[in-house]
Length: 55
Image (cartoon, rainbow, N blue to C red; front, side, top):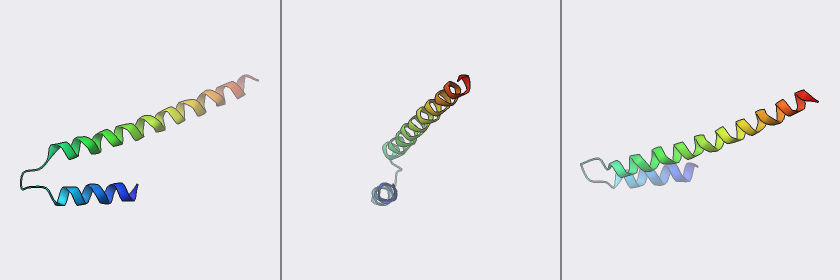
């Protein structure tokens, strides 16, 4: 993860004077993917907890 952040900062430093919105969209997309993965993990854990409570 640190490598990815360092790479993104390096690419952003090389940019022109005008900010490159594509890089921001890539960062937002990656954060949304991470949030979705964590959400799926939480939902699966809660479903197994509910199954355990019924026993």
